[in-house]
Image 1 (cartoon, one colour):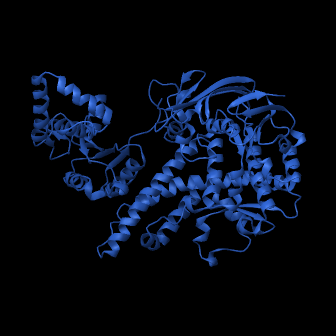
Image 2 (spheres, one colour):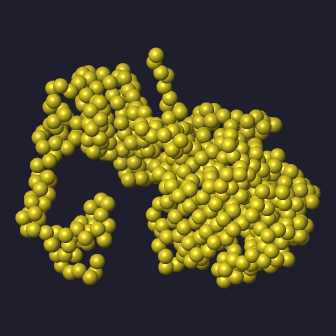
Image 3 (cartoon, chains in turn purple, green):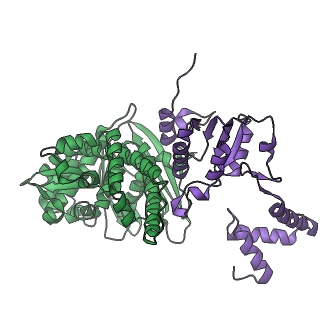
Length: 201
Length: 395
């Protein structure tokens, strides 16, 4: 973006660092901001600063929170005996939307990924072990992503937790609900076959 | 199956071209650089999403355009279907069947099957193991699309495992203890996916073997017999004492059992661990295996003459054609379209005539050649002249 100078170029460059924003989009957003009502821009700037100073990570589960502990960890109606382990805070939101899960969460902050230099110590695994020490948690659901890194993380955790005598499960991978079998790709359909279950009648 | 119509937009040298084909034999004739190969390359790409000429898709889009479109009407077991693939430089391909978009472009794989013979095939015999592994894996994916996922998972796992081994080696040399806590997990993932890949490859080799043997016999005048074997890095990491004489057949048989292979891979990885950490690479698994080609008991690579190497390369392609054609499902034939791209110029008269014999009864054969005289008489059929991007039927 050699055509722009000074502060405009800086703004475009900063916007371009955001995930999913390319140089063209960055330029469009920058000019939108220039043309926008000053009060609107003030509000945006204010929340940007606020989000960084106010939001932190829950000291128990690692989820994003405005307090020392997040809402889910503070909620007494939540079942303390079931724990769902996820990679990112956005996975908590995804599972919460299902309204199916009534236990609590543990956010790892990523997955094991040697290429990016992420090992067990870079994830919140030690915190997880500390949480399990008091014996309140009976069951663990591992809900890491169904890709190579997520599967490796799941296996690593399962191996570590097995001696503790907990019930450990992994989210099933398989067919999307409401779809047609014939439209499923071979890999998903193959996994669904491997993970088939018997029907209780 | 056969291709009845092909339309290209901004593909390679073509801004726009439409060609109608018939079942049987079709020769595309014209001087070099006029666009013959581009036509058949587009069909090969539609079938496998890879080109037999270049590794990068960017070269397939006509210079100055941002996207190329390949459309082909394919008739399979009497039923026509229009396949369409849009290549956008630097982005994922988009696919349509009968004008309706597919959620994933790779769902188009398997709708058109091709077997391409090209001058590059000589590298199957004379080149590195990498090319032979690719030959096997591409055949596997045509036979069982699920293996495309296993293959890409395996490649990813090996990348991660190598990264871990490398960093462990670095910290060991720096004097601190290497962090190997997750290596067991990567071993397990590599062994699971690797075993499936090995078992499928060995099964394919066993299926190819009789076809390669008979095709080689027919293409060459057969002074010596062609042999095909799967050389696994598992066998090589064993000490000689572990190997009983005459155990080759049972050894191969046991490699078709993914459970057994998985256990053996895990065992080999635990024995090789110090060496792997030292070298920073994964030393055992399908990525280190090879398709072994022999002529009269000697390795073809290095011992075979130029003519023998060609016969063997042709035999491999013919064998994969036979294997695919025998693989029919409940509703459609598996017979691939045969593409002979500039191969006759590479062969002597005897091999030309024999190859012509072997492919003459295929449902559809597309031949490209710079001069009409190179196409054997046995393959007389439709003929198109390709000149400066224009395709004209002359016979």
